[in-house]
Length: 159
Image (cartoon, rainbow, N blue to C red; front, side):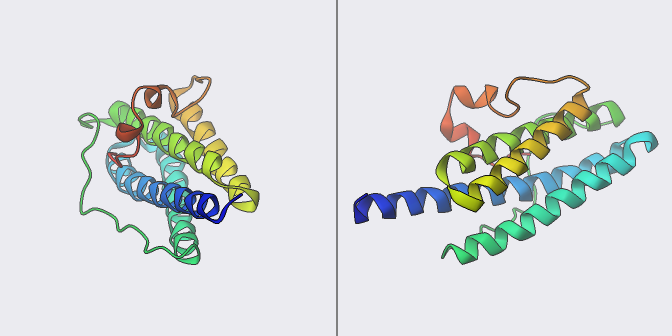
């Protein structure tokens, strides 16, 4: 591997880390909405997911800094993919958030190696499992179907 190739690989990995951080910021925001609308039966599940995304977000801030980057800041607000007027919509939003996060972690798996790749694969797996729990059904690769069309649309942190 040439020095240029190594530099490009490091830059790709940092961009993927930043994208994962942006996705976690969006998920934390989105779960704030979910928590405000979710029914009592699933409130604990929503809180657990919210806490998991906050922990991942905080870890990614450290990872981005360790990789020499300035962590991307959370936006003041995010456009939701659909209105969330009730508990049923909150469940759909939670599943959508998890699908999006899983897709972003798939990119980090692709663009990293070693322990970072293992951590990204674990984060992707956790998001996929949460997606299945919210949906009560599974898809082959959560977060990847919508990414097949456009890479630029996938990196937008719209939650």
